[in-house]
Image 1: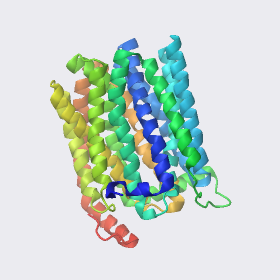
Image 2: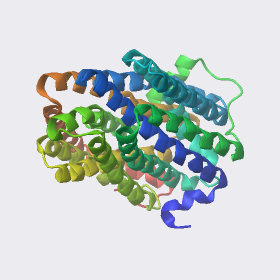
Image 3: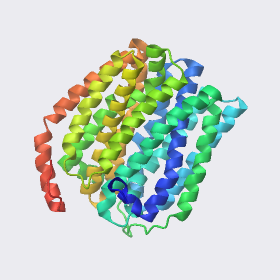
Image 4: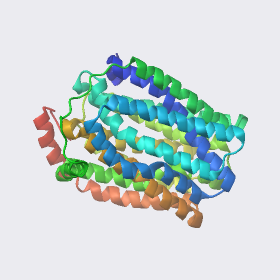
Amino acid sequence: MPSPLRALRHRNFACFVAGQSCALVGYWIQQIAVGWLVYRLTGSATLLGVLSFAANVPILLLAPVAGIWSDRFNRHRMMLATQVLEMLQAIALAVLAFGGWIEVWHIVALTVMLGLCVAVELPVRHAYLLELIDDKQDLPNAVATNSLVANCGRLIGPSVAGLLIANFSEAVCFLINALSYVAVLVSFAFIRVSPQPVAASHPPALHGLKEGIVYAWRTLPIRLLLTLLALIALTAAPYSTLMPAVVHEAFDGSAQTLGFLVGAAGCGAVCATLMLASRSNVRGLLRFIIAAALIAACALIGLSQSRWLGLSLVLMAAIGASILVTSVSINMILQTIVDDDKRGRVMSLYTVAFLGVVPLGALIAGVLADYIGATQTFLVGGIVCLSGALYLARQLPQLRRHMRETYARLGIETAS
């Protein structure tokens, strides 16, 4: 097995990846169709921000609790339940769209439903990876491979969605997403896991949540890495929310243009994931993280000024790659250094710091875009991101000292 794919030698993980490969393509097809449909019906950038807020704010509120659940209950069953509910959400969208009954409030309500499912799924998914592999040394590669699958979906899905919308309708996109979950259910039928042991009794939920937060705060690498991730989520990640408005302002484009631009970001993310997956361990990732944050900021500033589609495609690829390197590298480091009994709670904080903060950034960006324009909003976000990344880069020497101690305790040779 080639080194970048070595985690696939574990049968359960391979089955999981096979199902998710289909579902994530369907997910991105639906995401593009939903955003395009809302903007087509309303022409409002603010509503695009509201839609992203509705999709992600449940993560901010529910993910910490889901992290406690993932440390206490059967992760396999929880994952399966979320996949079934997400399939039902896609079916509801398809039925409303094909029937001609769909309205913006339907889309927002069903988006909230999907957000609730994702809020539970993501912390459980991060912790569930440990049960899908037989050798913990392959866990960082499993994280990178999982991200590779997600970003392949992000590469393929938007382009397919653009073609489907142009030639058929958004309803067809919703139907395809619903059908993609059939592959997920089949894959779960072949997975046979041995659940991680859990304590017979647990402290109250609030005490467990507090314990996880205190642990993360007192561990300097976790605290600083999550802070950087939250900054990226607030200033850089909301770019995807405004892409329908940017396509209209900068290029007077169509759904196909939107699909190609978002697909370019997915292409950059796939290339970055292949690079991360080829690594044997997590040493040396800190400098990648800081560099990626700086590149994301500069690419956002460049994108705000670009009116040439070719250049914008390159900048979108840089943004997708940079955000991916930052988020996945932090995920890989956390999965390596966190204590197993706190894994679910720490990964729920990771989910909150990234996807939980995105709705706040998206809502702010959507409102701001209606006042100064989507492209100028990108400029503001890029400047803020650049300032924060430079500040956090000054903390790198201190972070490296702590990471060297942690890596030495874990038997990892070099921390840099």
